[in-house]
Each structure stands twice: as structure tokens, then as C-alpha cells.
Image (cartoon, rainbow, N blue to C red):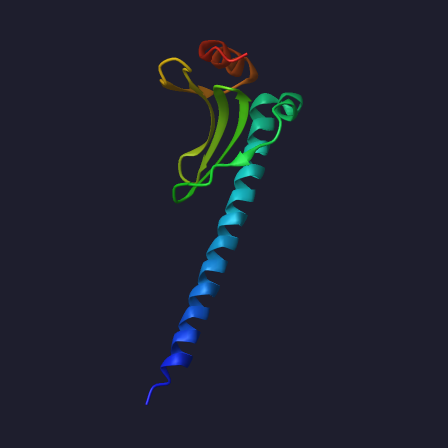
Length: 124
């Protein structure tokens, strides 16, 4: 006869182990997303400007085959880096209008482009 208590305990432990492995993989992906964002920002904006951005944070809900991280630029704008395994890597300034809530996303391909995007977003 089946030892139900032992079987249930083994199943519970296997499930806990699986969740821990998934969480560790998720944390590793988040760390990789931040590293990729910093490296790409340095490539596009230059080392000095990238360092001036401050601390990057991972976007916790990432699509499959995608790493994303962001750095807050102002109260209503942040720079997002997306690294997609097939589509490449890009930066976007994402801004929100404090009055109407409208969201604007503008691709950034250079330091001058970031300045224009920040001006368009009203970020100071």
C-alpha cells in the first residue's frame, strides 16, 4: 500500500525545489539584464554619460527571450533598455504626462538623441 504521507512530503519538497530553481534563474536573468543595459548604455551614450545615469534596476516581468532594465531619469521619465535575443538591443526614453497620464516611448540611439527625447518629454 502507498505511504501517502511520505509521498505527499516528497511531492511538496520537489515542488519547493522547483520553485527555488525558477527563482534563482529569474534572479540571474535580472542581474544579466542590468549588466546588458549598463554595457549597451556605455556603447550608445558613452562611458561618462552612462555612469551619470545612476543605478539600473531590472524590469521584473520580462517576456521570453527578453531582458529589460531601467534607470529613472526624472519623476516622469525613465530610460529602458531592452535586449531581445532575436530583435537586438535598444534604448527608449519612456515618459508619462503628469496631467493626462499619456505614455510616450522614444527610441534613443545617441547621447544627443537622449537630449532630444528628454526635451520632448519635458524631463529636466
